Image 1: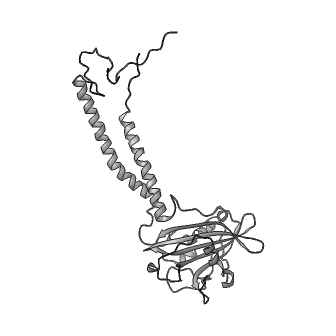
Image 2: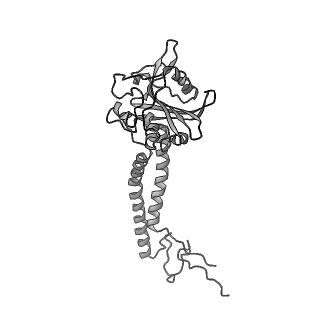
Length: 304
């Protein structure tokens, strides 16, 4: 009875498998770290498709949270400059409006509440000045955010604007006309800090029924940094972990391959089986190893 040859993996294939085996746990760990740090596995949640496909933008209202005499928290329209650089003021004046009322170095990463507005500008659905809602129209919107169950309790020790149990940095309220004619309400709020420079963001989309009652369609909550490790998300984390892993795994794999090659060569020169070191002295050349079968010829196919 004969057996097949024992075949060994090519060294390049071994190196490739080592890289793959290193990349898989690196990707899993990077995704877990990204979720713990930013609130999502790989990429930021995108805008709801109903916002992207909206027929038009009706109103844009910059808002600021204020504590009311009865203790409730309301989102009130910002009627003018707040006296602090970097804050929205007044009604929407057309494309580029947001860039005129913020620090020059603030970009898309920080101005999350503006991402819907920028998208609508790029698609030609926000090209002219628009009105803003009044205080009576924004009343009760904070309750909608609370009832959605996305609010993260933030740390008052890291925030200079105290508004009670939670802290907010304001945002934008959008009224849109959906592609099917439905009335949509988008609430985009930059929240307070959960740790030093680590802030929350809330984005909720509602549909307004015939009587004006809102129905929650989608809700996102995640984090961003204003001064720290912003930008250190899944891809750079994965590449860093993968590089560190390969710096350990690849040299080790090469050393193992080199050691095995030298061991096999030394065994052949000593007349031993390169696989199991069985003494092959006295056996005819080409005879398979009696111990492990290395070198056994392939089975012959009987003649028809």
